[in-house]
Length: 253
Image (cartoon, rainbow, N blue to C red; front, side, top):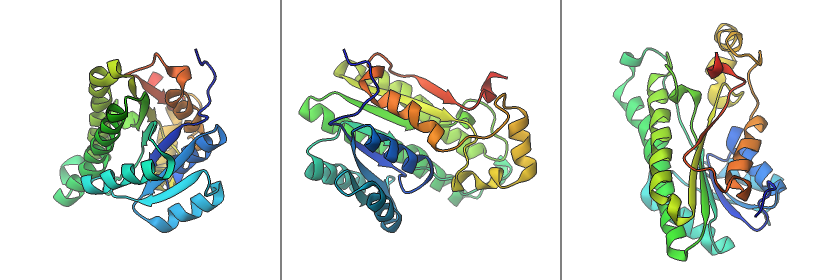
């Protein structure tokens, strides 16, 4: 039984891969032997990352994960390029509104759910169909958030979508775990990305989060990579339906 954390010979699709946590996971996966397909809506950012990693190991594909036809094309492109899909990291997310929950515009509400929930479901469904068709084992890692585990003032709809991602993770794990497909989630705390700039870049808000975090700081994208590597690898072969919290201890207090 494989107990080391390595991905040699594995092929992974990583959504939201153009920057932040997604880009860090892509680099980490390749460093541990995987080939990766980088997915996001803007191809230019993906091309830059693919050039950095190396085109032999990284293939960029523009994809809006809220659109089923584009996700089907993403999986087909991966199979054409590398022969199969073994791992999916659902990381693409959006949070277009920061403010009181009841004041969110309808368009922002709908966009948040389209990307953060529908996108995760559609990508997972397409990869599960592929794995079933070829009778292969696989791993899905959904990037959730501590905002899905507790109240999320001023990020209420984002928190709702991340709670839905956690529910999706557990239900899929129960339904497909017996077919050799593991589904787990990571719930990061405050990570310094452009996505979290509204908090990290605000001294008052950042201090509020850091003051209730035992690690006494916010995190970096690279600090999520180890969790993703573990859950995607055969070292986690008996881990299914789990939510791995990586938050510096914030939810422990």
